Length: 261
Image (cartoon, rainbow, N blue to C red):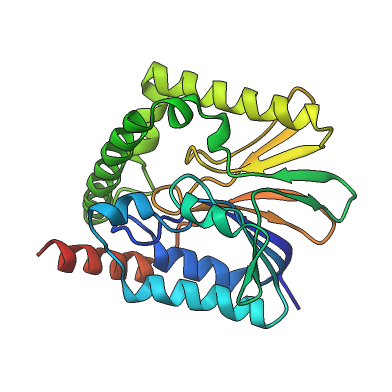
């Protein structure tokens, strides 16, 4: 029996060192579902053009998703800007995984959610691609530094998880303004389309709140916050932040040290 009705994830960035594949695998094992939505930037072709960092754990994530599809879970892949090359396959199914540019999910309570990655509502990505690529490189560097800081915090026995990238977003005024502009823009589009809510990704900032009478849900990411959206059997939506077990954290650190050697 599936633990939840639906799972929504985005911004996994397979093919990069920052990808938290181990934690994602733990999460997927914990939450079998009837529906699995992959809402963009699952594979990072941008980063793979610079260098490919594909681990055995990332292979296992792909195999896990394919296995879920074979066993009856309805899996949808909505490409984002980092895996936009797959947009040419919209309308085609690969191994029982459907590729769509967007989708409408009807929850168990009857509410209709618009599923879209969201890069179309990011003015930087749309009109200044080189700035977006430069920002991606900087964000990746922050996440790598954060991995070392997380290890140091565990050594010093500091409780809880602390995100350097998240701290930077909160403190840098332009970053906060960008997040608000993105959220308002995509919520406004959802309202015009007469949806009850929108579920997206792209900005690596998990969220759940009302904007213009539309429920705005963002999946977050699997490079820093390790978060996703789940739908319970009654249609209730929830943001889940998965920190993983202590053992998995140590394995991830060991992989990082080995790759850096």
